[in-house]
Length: 97
Image (tube, rainbow, N blue to C red; front, side):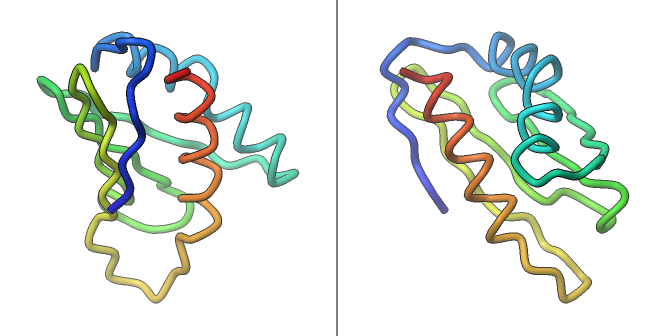
């Protein structure tokens, strides 16, 4: 689990909108890829799915006034999510400044 300080207060709703509008392009540019990313938002939790890679939730973000916590989901396949997590963390760090 990784935690990012929420320097600029960012609500779960605002972060959900930012992710939907910007993260897919950010990730695809960084990886020189064309992946789809799905998001689900309930209360202060945002779930991130990569349907072309694996089924289920890959990352869950818990958003509070002070921090954004990233938790890895239970992935059944033997897929390395380290690179995806690095890019997600970098993106969130930029947006939380």
